[in-house]
Length: 164
Image (cartoon, rainbow, N blue to C red; front, side, top):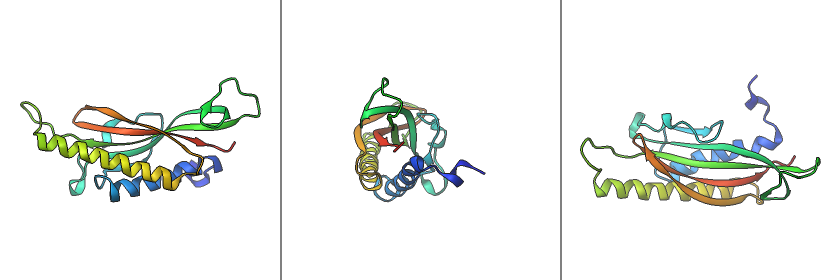
């Protein structure tokens, strides 16, 4: 048995969010991805970023970076009492290919295309968060991720109430 066969109620919003992010980024962001889903352990390895079948390039992920007790939702409280509720700090991001040239920088047009694509991906993720998570979800900020190994991206941070 895998954990996905018996998803705890507290984790169900993560499964739905990942499904929705994959759908929205492919349809409203910069297009198809090579990989998309829930990734364990914080910022994912960028191994799935490279080009894949059909000319697609990139990956999208939903990852839990912290689970913390709270007394006021959206604000972690490490000193909370035994009966405190739990919230998950989640990062949702997209990493796309960045054209790499042997000698110098990619063209201005290529850089602009990737930049605009990342904005489209960010807006698609935002829509997924607003449309596919419980209404009390806190949408924090979008952060750009610096280029490395021919890939570049960005991610949103949100807070989800785990209901436990």
